[in-house]
Image: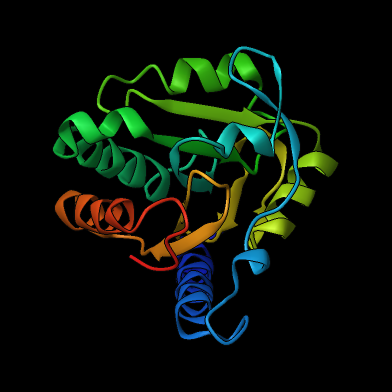
Length: 203
């Protein structure tokens, strides 16, 4: 596939992600995107191979991001930023975790996820989740996440939404952290939500 076509696909994916983020923030998914509109039950496995469901979000503030380990830019950029934001939170980071859900179950086995997330620049408190194609599709649907495989063979890419969802310790949606946000602004959003408590509705 030519570079120009790849560039067009990348632009379309980013445009979709931007529209999705605005939809969540502005209320296209509801008057304010009610908590029930984002998130829901899922059944996946973590990077250790253990079965995990939505209860993994309980008792901590969670930054939920969908991506894949072969992602060339958006995923490592986001995970690096979340790693820096985690440091900026200081002691409050004990109540915060990053949840990285793969939308490429064909290649992202638990072992691959564990190796990828061992990057010391990423957030220390990161849970990597993967699963069957159907299980991943159900999780993505619950979070209104778009993704589409592009190309053939083992070197395919996956276009996907690039926003991050901040979820409360109750497992409810709080707000969107836009792609490209600086670590400081990420930390500021998370801290504002923490001040509101576990039933925060914005950040």
